[in-house]
Image (cartoon, rainbow, N blue to C red):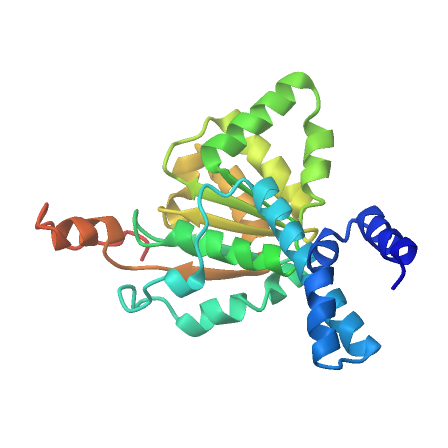
Length: 261
């Protein structure tokens, strides 16, 4: 390969943002020559490496956008410690069919049983499948909606969020809401109904949601839309945090009694 052609090749690779290929080209061409690889084999390998690099960059960008508080996987989840969970149900959710079908997932259970871990792990899977994901705690979400409402941009922001394929709302029920806040949440869920998926976690059974929202009618309306197309996972078990403290001898607490029955 002449110097002009060689230089032009590298310049074109940079122009096309094929930095990975440009960086490894020289070494790989030497290997390819020694192994007498065909032009097709060389191109196939280089393009495959470049495609994998671009996919990884897109995943990193989506993970940053999602604002996940930490990164968890389903492989890290201890299903043996939470035998109340039907592992097949969780495995079915990893297919992301619920996101394709714009369905919801609700994870119920007392504090510390792994609801947020499962929600984030499913979110990470969705990101790897190419879906847009956004995570907010209930408190953060209500604060955002209240701010949008005060600025007169609520409709525009809800419309923008509805373009997300998956919205994760964590910790519904940990703090009570004012009626105005509950109405803001209802507007979001109502507008999102059958347009995009939600994963929601809560430490309260559905019968107590009227108390959370301080309005039985709004609670019923939210549940009606949330549960119409949904998978509900009810986790009954001990807190992982209590388990860990018990393991190191810091507490002898009895297992937490689930109130989600």
